[in-house]
Image (cartoon, rainbow, N blue to C red):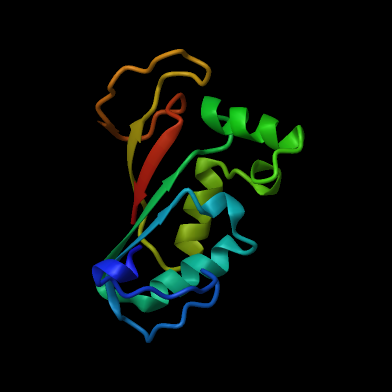
Length: 140
């Protein structure tokens, strides 16, 4: 679909990006970290292909958040996708980012409503990290 709209696409593993050094001004990794074989290598590759002033944004659910626990439970019950997921803590992600050459991250948190509700209300993201938030945007 993207290529039909003129967007250049490439299929590759995050741990081995087929791009030259400093090619991108920004990178988004959303809902992917928990499925990577080697997240540190993926962060190192992201750092390599980012321009010196470029930025990385992660969108993820930290281990222990209500939604991450919901999906982890599905994985333990044999869900074909979430049985492969490995959720990380905030400290683990920060450590991997710093090891990979990124700055201390900034956070925006949202999704304070628990899984299983019949309907969900609109939420406005809040600056900073909140442990009860199930979706966090991490910028570095």
